[in-house]
Image (tube, rainbow, N blue to C red):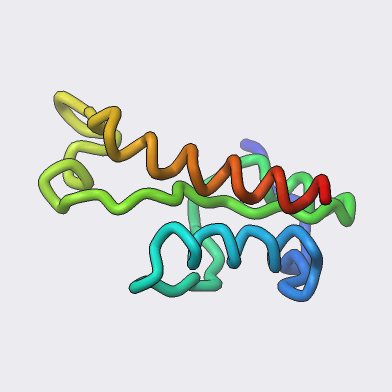
Amino acid sequence: MYEMPEFNASDEKSIFYTNLNKAISSNYPDSYVLKMFSPNFNDTGIFRATVVAAFSTIPVNMDLKYLRTVHNYNERIPRGILNQGRSVYTEFLNSCLE
């Protein structure tokens, strides 16, 4: 059995969190960013344990009928939905390079 090392949350005042929040808000003006710990196992905890900022996000507006298929029978996400997420990531990366 593997255990996740202890870690603290990534700094929400970091340039990465700030830029990601701005990119999401820019592409989804009627939304807000929710800060939370996810109970699933992913790489973010391992990065945070070594004091590397890590954030998990899938910046898409997904209809409930598609959300219900995630990790389920006939899993699918329409490409059009993913294009909006790509726009968020592109804006985020560009702002980090400025």
